[in-house]
Length: 116
Length: 114
Image (cartoon, chains in turn cyan, brown):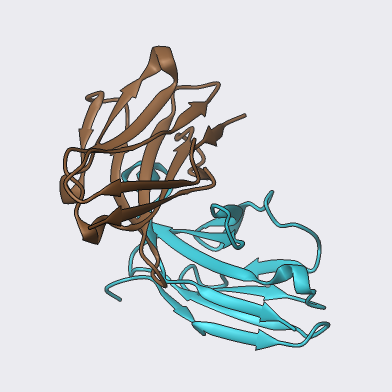
């Protein structure tokens, strides 16, 4: 597509529920990144994929969070047993490849997750 | 480890005045440095980047930044502020190479007064 698409744009869920957030990167971009932006903070790195594999998942806060990218394109960030502290904007970005990130990523508009 | 410090979480300028947003970084390897802008309810947009070429980098919307290794700084400037510049600005660093993980600062919210 023309840009990075994230769905849904807003998600409200109850504490303890499971949620999935979707990211559709720019066509041809092999690198895909997830960030989390809490209120009043800069985005924090969660995980990045090069192709289908997670090249660096050091930012995932705990084992309730995991992400997949089975075909090397669309990615899904999955959060189990959601907690109120998970409320944030989840940002996805893509770039042509790992070495191409120096040109800057293209970010999506984010999914605002609210856990009540 | 890389980190970024943005001095001033809120900056207010008058329309037509100089904009100066400060960013200092720490990095154990020559870094790549970026400024992103975020308008309300929108995603992050790349303003400009430093990738070890010219130390004075020009970006979109009249913004520029200068990489000063001796001061470990990458401050963002614009000679004359416009009302449309009101947004949040983030400085970010990445070591480049095999990882493009961006480390962001906490952001500076720029207000432009008429």
